[in-house]
Picture 1 (cartoon, helix red, strand yellow):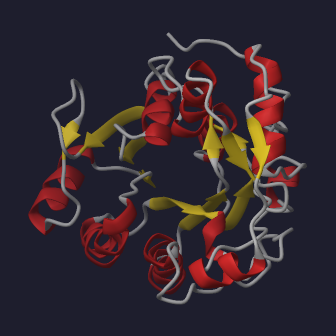
Picture 2 (cartoon, rainbow, N blue to C red; picture 1 turned 135 degrees about the vertical axis):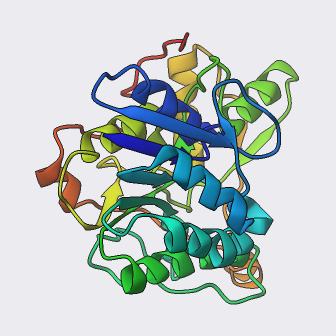
Length: 286
């Protein structure tokens, strides 16, 4: 099976790429964007000729969209995703990594059947989350052979053994004896990078089309997330200070209180189960 990973130099993309290239049943091509990376094609999906040439060379049966660009997410979707679908072979499967941020109302416990909603433009999250939701809707309307994967905040070690930004920040605060504010009244479905990527690998040969949430059973507040990770890392958590999100602040900045996910699909479709925070052993990736 020919697999193309767009965004193979990113956090989730690089972990996924590193797992796929070890499996004989996949012929894998990965892409990077800003800097040349050994073994990866340098591709700008917003440039139609660039992505066309990449697709001709890799001829993917499955394309995994693991791209993200924060403030530039809208251009990635409006230009890059459309260019990609224009030149992708029509029977190919497109796996699109999306986000729990498509649920702007923040009521929590969202399943695959729940209806997402856009953020108001003044929200700090609007550009990224709204672009992801536009990408979901584009695929639902224009590319039937798709899988939309929604995930919450991803944590864990990268391919080189370094930590994600969230844990790196926690460790830095520990080392510098700085206070780290953390809310107890916000909830997210934190998911380990190994569980996300293992589930995607399992999904590749399956015929499933539609939406799937990759999420553990238990949601966490930032405070409980850091507290549990401190135990695993052998660190003290006494630099954590509760700083709950106030209603007025949340309303002003458009921050949802609870975007936690539930998965009805993965529980029956996949053997891989996403583990709760605190259940994942600490191991260095080589």
